[in-house]
Image: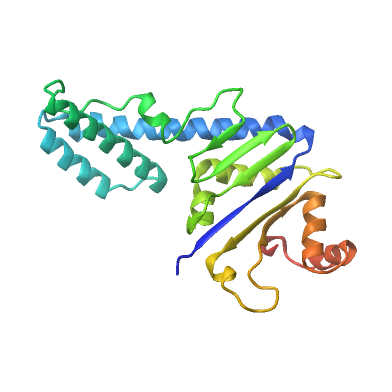
Length: 234
C-alpha cells in the first residue's frame, strides 16, 4: 500500500571526498540529460519521421511510448517533453505558423526535466520533487514529500549516484550525520513515542552517535551490536 512519506537531512562531508562527490553528481546529471535527448531523437528519427501528418505522428508516438522497454524514468521524461512540443506546435498551428509535423527535441527542451551540470554546479534536483545542495563541506538532501516519494527519489539516477558515493566515503572524525523521515502511517500512531521522525540512513561517526542515541544505548554498545549484524542488513 502506497503512503505519503519524505526524508532529508544534512551531512558533514570529509574535505577529501568533496571533489569526487561533486564530479559523480555532475557526470550522472549530464548522462541522464543525454540519455533523454538521445531517446527523444531516436523516436523522432525512427517511425515517427515517416509522416507529415500531425495526427499520425501523435498516434505513432503514443504507440512507441506504450511499448517502451527502456529505463522507466527516462521514458517518463521523453513522454512529457515530446508531448509538450506537440502542445506547443498545436497552439502555433492555430495561429498558422507551425509545420504539420512537430519539430525535433532540442537540448533546451530537456533542460526543464534534466538540467545539465557545469563544473560550478552545487545544486541538483527536480523542483519540489527532490533536491541536493552542497554548501562548503555540507550536503543537504530532501526527497520531497508525496506518495512513495522516498522510493521515487532514490530511484532517480542522480540521487542513486549520491547514495552510492556516500557508501564509499572514508568518513573521518566529526563527519557524517543522519537522514530522517516520516510517513503518514507513522504520524497517525497513538502509541507511546509514536508519530515522531525516524532515522532513514546514517553515515560516519556522527551518524553512528545519533543512531546510538536514538536507540537509547551508548556508542560502544551500539558498535558492538552492529558488529554482529551482517553488512547487507545494516
